[in-house]
Image 1 (spheres, rainbow, N blue to C red):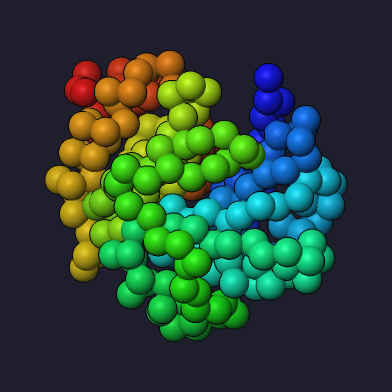
Image 2 (cartoon, rainbow, N blue to C red):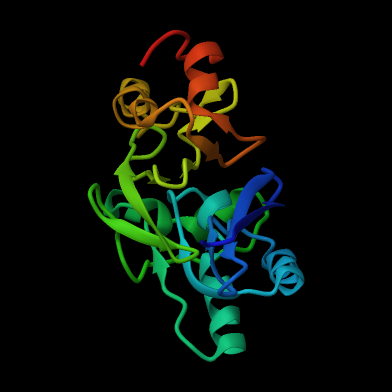
Length: 220
């Protein structure tokens, strides 16, 4: 049986949860949403000591994707092998190509990034050697994706759903109705037992949010 472990590293002034997920048995794992503070992420990787096989992005906002290019470069130099960046959905390309501009607004030095693989609804990705389904969950951004494993009762939802809240949709490209629809039609039906990691703050379960989240109370 896999020995899946996880750690979250708050990065950037936005305190975004960069997730490290690895299999202690194989010593291989995945970095999800390295938004910045790459030296801090590398220190954490040195502490947990696993080989990174890929970097995954849930969406194109600077606090989730701003450090991806630099981290890829550092890891490939250290490991001597490709470390592909996968995700999000192609509809977030305009955000990924605007990371430098986004960063200047907050005095952050970031790099634009083009993923090695775009993701879409119905795809699967490997996280710590385990297969996760890709769900397109727009609303916060047009190309936001979530990664779910019903077998492990785990989901990584980025900025779609939080403990007691949901993702912001007050951007020009935001769509609150689409966000709530994605949560109700794609995430909650997976079951109350699913635990999720999110982009900011502590995680929760789909059941707890279905029951108590004021944006979802009693729905789904």
